[in-house]
Image (cartoon, helix red, strand yellow):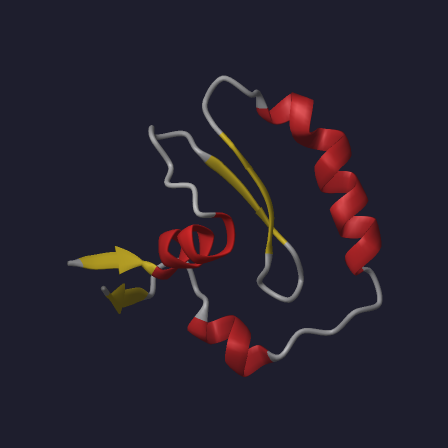
Length: 78
């Protein structure tokens, strides 16, 4: 079975599988899952969390090779 890398990483880091579409993920500048929320949470409710994550990431570079390997359209074998 092939899954998008974003789902595999999320499962590895949180142990939680998305249970519905419109699942929201917040990933930091290093590719770590900061949080995830189901469809019952609106994007506007998450705005302060996203703002804080962006502020925390300012000034931090990313490793372009690792970032490319974590591209959401990538797939990984399970």
